[in-house]
Amino acid sequence: MKILKAALLVFGVLTFSQSYGQQDLEAKQKKQFAKVDKDSDGYVSLEEMKVRFADKKTKDGKPFNIEKMFQKKDVNGDGKLDRKEFFTKGKKKK
Ligand SMILES: [Ca+2]
Ligand SMILES: [Ca+2]
Image (cartoon, rainbow, N blue to C red):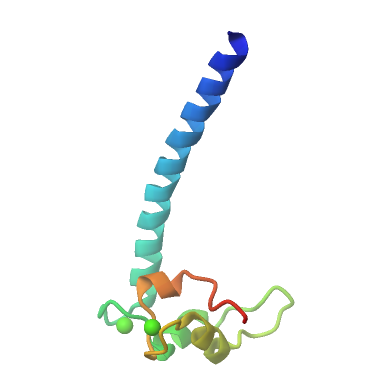
């Protein structure tokens, strides 16, 4: 009985934190996206990406290859990133 209770508790906490975490994440992503989307047209252009990552460095201290990153993220190839594309890690290699 104890185990069942514990399992239920863990399950409940997991479900709770999962849905909470997702809402939280979405709110965060919206904010982040709005910051990058300077003209607020709902898309991030390459120029906007460049502004955003201009002073960012990769983990090894190299400058970002923004064009490459942008192309990778632009899954449907329309030259701009919607919010979903912006937060994806990019196309899967085939
Ligand atoms: Ca924009
Ligand atoms: Ca796109």
